[in-house]
Image (tube, rainbow, N blue to C red):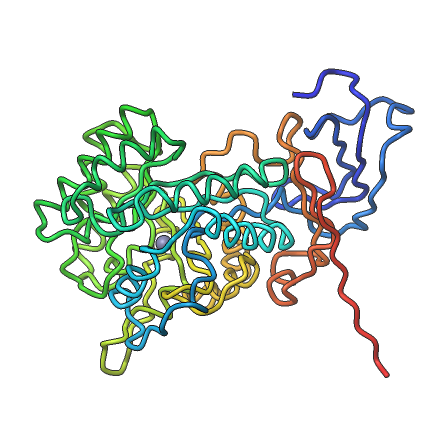
Length: 417
Ligand SMILES: [Zn+2]
């Protein structure tokens, strides 16, 4: 926290903080929000007029793959459009991964995110016997280069399976030693359900050794026989890791019979698992082999929210073999999420806005997120009065502040002739 009486660096006038009271002036000193000073204490401060517009404490991107981003230009296209083919195509590319080019691609995506108002990112990086630790090293290098403008958590992600892909368990331990923050997983990508359970057990062994959170890709499949969300929830409770585990995708949950779906959701709630849906990617990948009507491809967002479970969403993929678009813009993904999850009521649209801000901050367990005195001074002024307008207009991020420094100013210009 900034010391009492520290000189004010920035005053943001008439800001309307998302879900945090009425429009007011916000004060920033030494990279933190601070309580309003007595009169005359902010003489040298930069003054920014938010003019009553909506402000967020930075957008939070809780699920992305920076190591794979932007590779779609140098690999063959995904003809079937399925997850399986997307993974196979990457094998070829991964063999020739180099740390420098991964860092360069990741850096471009990080700067795109920042320009869109994203000030915190959680990125998965592949850990397997094809690319080894190079994806981790490349993204860690990009993180180092951008460490003063964005916060990045790295998840060690065994996409090829842990038991199925020889040597991956050892690489997972090495990845944590080499700077990964969070233990990842993809338990459905094993040969047998017993191996899926073992995959999850190994992740917990590693997480407990490093006192780390867990964030897995769970049941990203149209196969309604997939049962790894239940396994993950059970093991979370057994290991006492409630509140520290995140499940991404969980597409199969949408297709379960109602009784089983309700039982799993109750278990997810008991395990305090954070859920992340990735609507852009999964609308693109899922249901490819369905006859009409084709499934929507995303998890049971509204049912999870109705049970009080923390639900967020992520960009997931940026121009890779899984998804050909993406620019890490939470307003773009939010608009897609609203469509995919049927979130059209005023309060549901506000929930969508929460998913890319406060809910995502809970996923990443950010202790210094928000506008309260002492929180990191991340702030984005949106050219919109409220959440619905921001999503509708895909509002310009007029000012992006990270840790008390103005990083980006954006301007929309239109000239009628
Ligand atoms: Zn993913």
